[in-house]
Image 1 (tube, rainbow, N blue to C red):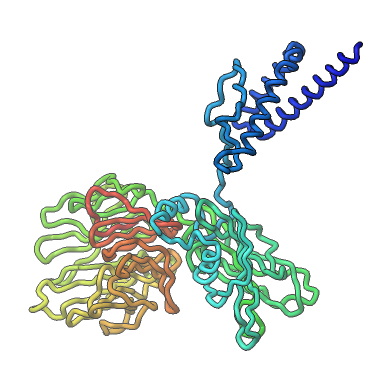
Image 2 (image 1 turned 135 degrees about the vertical axis):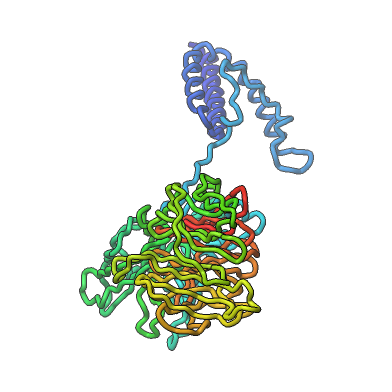
Length: 600
């Protein structure tokens, strides 16, 4: 072999290596998408089969490539505009050779983005993707921008939902694009002015929202070992954790996920000084929704305020959570009517049309087999009647007002197992005089208990006056009602066996302009009230009130009904109807006619 041939071979090899290196560098910048990788692999296999006959052409092609590369480098380093960039339009790049494979589509040249999953352990402010997406549609218009701020969500959750307003100092923030850990603390009363860390709130980003998924003790002392996060909880719930310290104690709280409602609290008792574990048993009432949060809190020995807070998601399941009834009942065309709860469409009439006047104000009994209602009977005449939900149209008389009065609102309570001699339902009705100028008193609250004994409270003049329907408490002894005293009112509590004042003591800490009241399956008083820009539904007790959800608008409520599983149905005086399924936002239904009062 001649020296010249050896030199040519070496030169060809170097050129070939240069080309191979250049092509590899260019290939490294390409990210295949879709089935692009499989197409490249097929082309590489085909290329290897053609490699032998392509090699003789490399020597000729190399000169053109070197010239093109030189022009490209010149263009990169000597751009006439003074911008150090590659002008690909004038770089002299060779035209790619034709291929028997089709050109990649735009979807093939785009790197796919993984579909984010809604966090499984979501607690607040959203517990499902649907509610977050509803907020997203309003976020662009400026609705609740704080839910897009991790720190704001963490502080709002601890303050408003966990009801710990003193834990309001932001100690540390550790955010990433998809997660955040916000450590919050407080100043101990009587101690140092420097705030101490109390809890680290863990958040995950979904869409534009930041969602709480739990909270840890910043010092890693207080932890929950069981149940596991997201576990299904049944009452009573046993909660355990590892012991620490010398003389410790904590309280354990089963709460709703997105409202301030607490369903039950338990206590660990004293632990520490070698105690391996702590334990607490928590009995809790019927939750109003399927999602909850388990909170363990250790108070400070200095001032009694929170020293450590940990929290994790709980699930209550369909049996414990809200289950929306399939139907509700209202009046259409003067007749008691069954409606679909899904959209408000009518199903069937339960009563016949009556010549003396239409039906009004239906209420379903606790067993769900009867619908009570007021049936008009001509001028200044009506009566309380019932009809079965099965559609038999067989109407039964329940109560009638005194002569010269009509029933304006009522409540019926079925006898429970402990009612002595209680063969008949308890009935309370508020009757008003047809001619208030000539009749005294102007109104009466008549209460007939399970034993059939009747007690009446007279209203000499109105106001004070009962608005909307009164409601029996579960004891069968007390009747609560919103009582208008002028431009505002309160929730009054009447005794069905004694008392004559038309303004008895209050049933709960509430005062407002207009309200409708009922009692849920746990005996809690549920109030729907007009705030000035919305209808707010809340739980009301002797110690305060807790908001459950709100309905935008300035119409006043006319009725509120709660199912055995905690679902809520609300109507206003304009005839609009909303359904709340136990979590998230209420859904407005679309009946074909306005519905004044609704029930399920």
